[in-house]
Length: 473
Image (cartoon, rainbow, N blue to C red; front, side, top):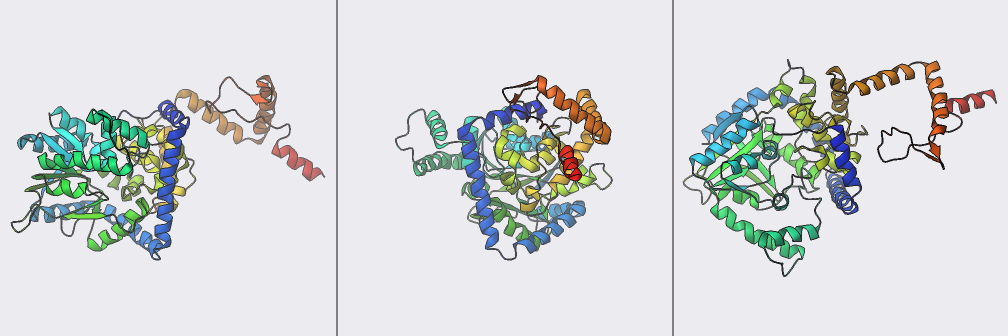
């Protein structure tokens, strides 16, 4: 299997390690706070921001409702421009398509730009198994590639790494100490190493922020020049894009782009917005000789299908992968990205991972939320993530995923809380029983669902008792 899943135990263990790591907590909070402040400043200076969010919501909803039509239009126009379009039903097919392109062209080295879709299909592993060396050229992605880790954040894959850790990784790669370990020197070192990879690579691989059906164009949004080098220097360019990432026309694309960078990094626009419409033409100075776009389904079509049992989750396909929901989520802010054991973390990951990779495998994630609604407040498409998290929890019960003990406990709790006499009796019994496990003002029961936190001691009088006393007075 491509994704191993995330049980409640796994999530808690990983989250507990992250919470106990002071330096990691500092790095995580600093990075997410920077993104949150940047987004707020960007929208404060964008008077039409809220109206455009409503407009994008309408566009994305209408596009997903007519996804097959726009995908066919995109394919026709992309092919007319000279692009070779491939359809992949699942992750294995998508990885096989890219691997076949590399093999058929005798490619030994692939230069890769940042892409969540390629993380989803584990493309690097598939290529390396076919003896194709893969080099991540986004600085953050390259850092975690050196560390042998997965991305920590949709926007900032290496936000959990300290400068000292990065220096260690660079020195290990170089096989010698670095004379200068300033941030500028580290960036220059990475640039020096990676530029040669662009020149030697036989294939450039990217994701796709969106495909514009009107012209069959692929749009890439990046903040580093590596993205354009990947799409122009190698002879072949292959992009892997989820089928939901379609904009009907350039007016819709403009609304999408106006919100993407502001929501993600707080910029009015990303540094580079690249449009790829087919391969290099005779009059072009650079560009690939071949352009391939792999349209990835991997469970998305069932969400868009109104006859599917998953149709209630079609709204999740409106996501533009800005990462804003991660930055405001109190759970992600404590647990970090690796606790989700998925290419998608945070609130979006808690919904999309169970839907794409299996609810039984990712049963922990719908519960990795306080349901505070902060994610909806910042989402550029106003996606109702809390609604879907609750629905997934209900699906777990319907499918019998919780353990027999959990099911019994929930039913018992429902029975008690639905009966006033039982509720009062349970409260009194809890008070009596608590005394057996209270020592020096600390309650330590034999079973503690919070793992390492002390449970509060029940007061001598309940709220109902206090209320009745007031009523008597």
